[in-house]
Length: 390
Ligand SMILES: Cc1ncc(COP(=O)(O)O)c(C=O)c1O
Image (cartoon, rainbow, N blue to C red; front, side, top):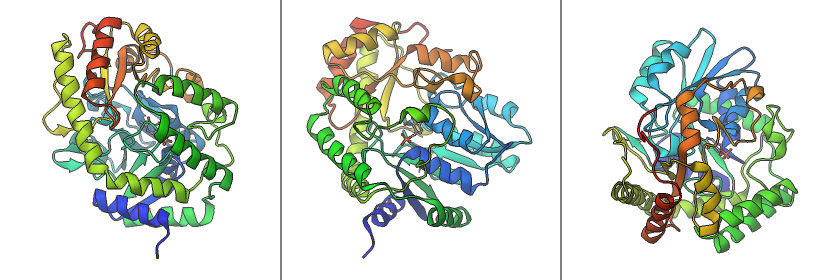
């Protein structure tokens, strides 16, 4: 009988249609494993969009490599392929294609530019479970992909992450790495996370999310819960227990989520179309997404004219409004200079950080929530001028 983590890995690999999957404590740990297996180290450069989460940049820094930030294009918030070529140097070791909010990257162009120079592409699928590009699932284009199952990701195991790959050489290297270096989570952390998953299932609904998130962040700072990110993760130095595997409890939660995956994805697709319609009716100039892309949105991004006000007002009206991404390396507390990001490096991304809020598409948010949320942002802030442009 296979252990539960292996069963989750196999179920996930089967669903995606790839040979191998490796489960980890968090998505960022999954990225670290891929970078290690690709031999990324001191002096190497890793290209990624300047509109991401700092936890995505940490593994690059932990390995002594330099993150190179590419600006985004304003409709899908993905790396602007027209700017990719000029960022490539002889030291470029990897390109990370992050499918932001669930919008697939222009994979044909990215793969063409990277493969001409023999540079592997990793897909960041943490926000893009179920999205397709030209009819093919995100996560099946690059040499490997990584996924996150953190609270507000497409499905949750509390926290959690996965590597998927069809490359047997890369899979072998990750196997060796896991055998020799991967630590198991402590019984205390795994147990606490199980309890948090139960509390989450009972209490977290669109109307309670803002309050619960504030409480959760406070408890994380006090060290009273297993947080998504510890304070020590806001500097680019690897914490001692970073390279950790997935617990049995996380894997069991993952298997449960796999059973309702198609329902989850269909719901998110439907919510995306509903927001398109409601926002158009409310006067937004909803940008057209290229036909090659069929996104499943983890959150629906929308530009508002007064993000600060909308975010401040939302909890008072029991509206679930997300802030991704508050700065080019989310969240706003990130000391950007320690990561080599200087203001003005990615102006389109910086504008998006000032304007974009995101709306819930998960299974606990239905048509009524969508209507209430759109009504709220229309009243609280209005649409940003020049919605689809930089
Ligand atoms: C785009 C993106 N990639 C990767 C991650 C890291 O995932 P995890 O929190 O599971 O480490 C995040 C942040 O949570 C993210 O927003």
